[in-house]
Image (tube, rainbow, N blue to C red):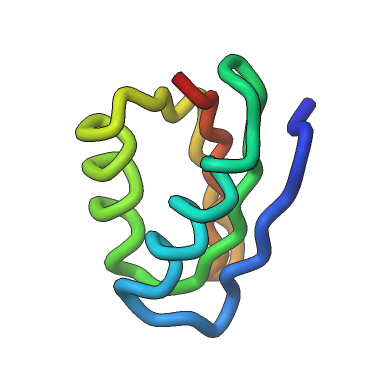
Amino acid sequence: MPHETLDCLGLSCPFPLIKIKERMGKLRPGQILEVLVDDPLAKTDVPGWCELMGHKVLKVEEAEGILKFYIKKA
């Protein structure tokens, strides 16, 4: 169950990553952020950024061109 949801629909790279970084900064370690994004580049960009920052992508869902990432803050 996510603690917060971040809607990045309609945003192109790098803006989803910028918004994710801002929101993750407000969460406490262990909290989960759900991110909705429709930029196809996010499929590789979001997991790569999370790995660099030490966050964990718990799950990725894709339906009708929308990606949902569940990210646990390090």
